[in-house]
Length: 150
Image (tube, rainbow, N blue to C red):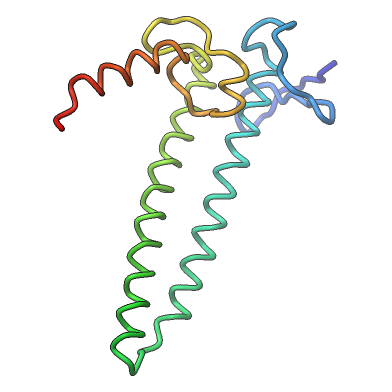
């Protein structure tokens, strides 16, 4: 069983999860334990992205030496541009993680934005920022494919 206590800094219950806990369809959907599981998963993902970004920034600063060879300089600038695009995608991902954390706090996490139906736990475990059920996502992708300008 999960232990609960009130966290004074956040005003929400602190939930302790047993080692190896995984959400199950055998328990009520988006109960306190499941919300805490996904909150921790999202925060760990966000922390990992931030750590990677800091390492990238450190590496880019260390590599800012001038390259005497034009080919080396061009290669370095190309690598830097690729890395910056990757970091921009990571920044957008952090915004999606923050939005998912806000949905956990407001009680809408785990429910499809289109239908209001629960999103499967397997989908949320694989993609914790999901906002659509698999069925709604497939409909969305089909519409995009139909209306895409080729």
